[in-house]
Length: 510
Image (cartoon, rainbow, N blue to C red):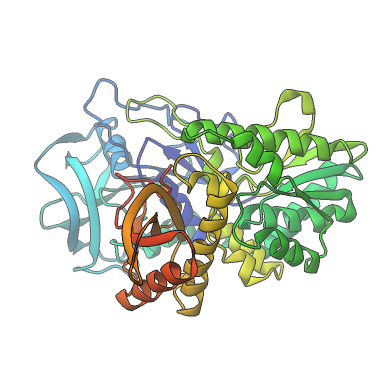
């Protein structure tokens, strides 16, 4: 990539959002922890410093050496980043008289500045800080103010160094995308050439070079990530890609057959393995959520290992890992935190499999994965699929798992999901599903009392699953869905709708 933007993460909740906003401008960006600067900075044409929960006035404040960046490359400090550039370069950062948080409007915008082109007085910005810049750094020139924040934006004379005390990456900042474009395109001179088509072309060529004529095994899940990864590999190596789709007995109704049919129409070399009995036998009597996850992961590995041995001389394992799975973020305490997580399709493979790993999507966000899939002509039905947990219905059946419970939940889930599609609601929801609760409740059907199962419906809106809010589905839809479930699914006499947000609740119930 010849147009890289380096984003140094100081622990802000918005760091991934900065990267995504940059990429929406068709400019490639990468996130690195502030305390792990790349040794070779030559490939980066611009640098952005993120916000942080820390204060620059603290003794433990994140304090990287920017001597090879500041004054040498276009540099933008956001919130903590702007305060950092001021505090350690002759300025003065002090506590705000009041916490500056939420919407504000620019009350002063300096004329004739490329950085502020297209912004005007009254433009809305989003603040989120408890410190504020009282005095600008050496050479600092004020560019913008709000009613409460005198130094909302500034630059350093003689450098392409800029600081802003608001967040251009959040949608509440009306002209945030324009501001980032001004900095990256007008000032840093980056080309806007990071497109799905360009990614496909480059990645396919790299995969050809890396893999050659060796064989690759991929565990398909039926989801967006593994499907797009499969298509990229198929473009690169054709029939040397061996896809395995395992039925763990915990898929949605008819999903095993329908997904295999979809893949057949994509020209992929796919083998379907029905191991549902094996999974359900292993899960007998287990009701602990973590215990169920471990059993499902272990049995998946066993099945996948058995099948992979049937592919002679396979050298590679492909995974649909995406960028948020891999980003090393920074904790509020100033140290590196999250490490790369195992991809749910393969459950974390043991060392004895001795396969090299290839991850075609490892630098993409979820929305970019969908755009790449669309550029390859993949079906909107596959690309628009809601996320589905690796353990499937196993963590949507609270308590122990039986074939009877799975069958009940499959029917409930099918009515709910099909209803969302018929009512034109499916694409407005990020993820939806049904939970079978370990509760029998009293009901009345005809003249008889019943004592049957309760199910919970869940529908959330989100961008990445890190946070989520419940969707306000129409009462008429919920009423129709509840009636259909109770009338058509034997064993269920009560339906409830989950209106919890994440946090504090999670999307799944287990």
